[in-house]
Image 1 (cartoon, rainbow, N blue to C red):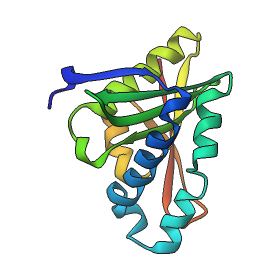
Image 2: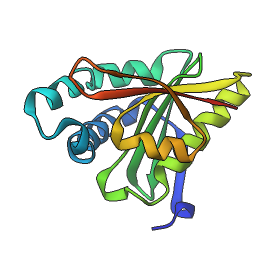
Image 3: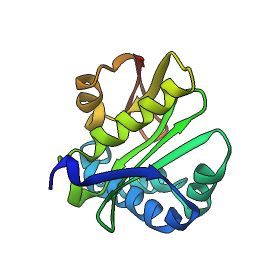
Length: 158
């Protein structure tokens, strides 16, 4: 599947269950280099990835959540706060390396530009750091998160 077959649109309340399931599956299956399948770490990463929180992220004014679709299938979820923080960027395991993350990130950056923001910021896991570096993000601080994983704060001028 090529990037051309991916469409991006603003998330809606109808997307809550599928988006939440996608994010949870992405963390569990694609971030094993970070959490090493340690149940307590995985559970900690998933604790706020609930349908209630996803609904709030989608419906709260000043929060911008987008979904990527490949036909009728949800392929990715991305989120941006009103101050330029990329709060979500997850791809369904079946769509990894097919341009979904790139398309979502471009959409989030375009939204930030339309808001007049000078940059985007995020906190990256080791798994995603090379992806973000390849797209112009630079790390400025690395620390351990609450679960003992490396978390690198990154930023990109828009």
